[in-house]
Structures are given as C-alpha cells and as structure tokens.
Image (tube, rainbow, N blue to C red; front, side, top):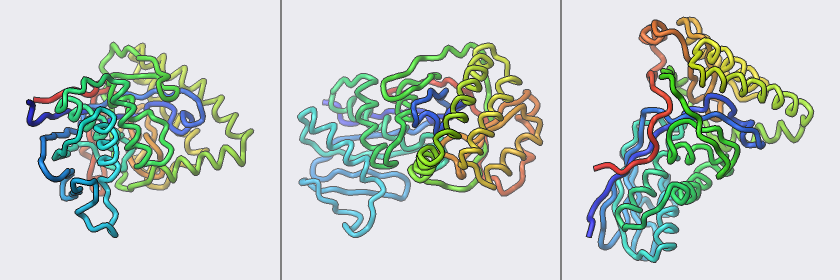
Length: 322
C-alpha cells in the first residue's frame, strides 16, 4: 500500500485571448516554469490541507474542525473537490495534503488551477485511481468553480496538458507546436484582483454594448491569427507587436488599470518588443517579449515591483513527483 505521493503542475500565461475566450472565442495559452507541488499521505482520523500558514482540518463526518465554522476556510474548495473525487471512486479514507506553490496567487498565472490539478493527480496516485488527463481536468474544475464562480476552464486544461494550446472551451482545444524557445518576462503589478469580478465586468460590457463587443472580438480574431503565426515562426518581434495590440483591445473592454498600464510602459521602456496584461486584468501580471538583451534589464525596474522573472513557455504539464 502506497503511504504518500506527490504531484506538480505548471502555472500559465495567456498570450492572446483572455475574456474573449469566455464568450466563445479561442485563446492561446501556454504553460510556464513556476509550478505548484502537492504532497499527500494517508491519515486515520482527520483530513488536513495545509498551504503555507493556512490550514484546514475536517473530521470523520466531513465537519470543519479548523478554522472555526464562522471563519472562512480558503481551502474549502480543495477539500470539497477531494471529497467528490474519493466518493466517486468508493474511497472512504482521510488524508493529509501539503501545498507548496511557486506561482504567485491572484496574479493571472493560474495558481489555483495548478494546485487543483496537482492535488487530483497526487490523490489519484495515492489511491491507485489511474485518472487520465481529462478526468483530472474535470475534478480540478470543481474547485475552480468554487474559487472563481464561472471560470473559462482554460487554467486547469493547460495545467494538466502542459505545452501550448489553442483553447475554445472545456474539452475543445488543439495543441500548438512551439519549435522556437521563447522567453517571456513576467512582472507582477502588486495588485491582487478577483477573477470572478473581472469576468462579470466583461460579460456586463458584452450585454450592454453587444455591437462594440462584437467589433472588438472580430479584431481580436485577426490579432490571434497574426500572433499565432508569429509564435510558430519564432518571430519574437512580431509576436510582441500583436501582444500589445491584444492589450489595447483588453483596455477597450475596461479590464486594464493604472498599475497595469504603468507596468506595461516600464517593460516597454526596457526595450521589449511588446507587452500585455495576462489573466483577468485589473492588476495581476503583465507579460512581455523582447530581444535577449532586454531581459537582463529587468533588474532595472522600479523598486516597488517585488515580483518579476523570466520564464520559458510550453513547459510540461502535470506529473508525478518522487
């Protein structure tokens, strides 16, 4: 009997298409190097989930023991996902889970999805369930809905699959072959935002201004085509240009912000070819591509940026860890 297992899954950046994907248009997303690791082991009497200083404890009947019931448990979505997974497969056991994520949270980098996907994979390994990628995505989506309301599903898909995909809704995707190494600079604005709030804003925009939204979406379709071709050809300069154009469309949707615009301008001043917000917007991260010399200049960013890094794209998806 296996007593403990571990699994990891990658973060993500959306190169093209956030928010438009919620309304049925495809988005180009890629896995990046920072990963979330989840370690699980069998437990006799209680279920425990720990992430940094945050701990959740549940009793034999699933009752919340800690924190007190009148205190919000930020790990509840993961517990609920795990309970459903185990119930579906006839497992009546408790476990302890420890989360170690290198992916900044509430930053548009898919941190919760990476944790959820790694969590499902680790539990599948622990109990010998043999879940495939589509099943892992299905269960991870349970937690994502509880975390974010009405997510597009793009984050758990790329966390499980890895690489780069053109995503057009749950189960509707095609893999993109990336033959040219493409480093991407990621800069955290320092502003946390809630995905569900930003998604609701865009859906309200689309409902109240359908003609404008339709025109922006049609322009986005052209931008995506150009951007995808640039990525496949390894033309980083063109890729950057179309990323900036995509950002302008997102700005028109009202999901940019002063911190995002400052971050974008700071990156462009370093000599980047192009930049855009990634994720829900309103804060979170801005990504950029540029010539090789521009990445070393990241150290010259203003001091208030505490998180910035360079990452490769099209990294591996969820895997078991020793």
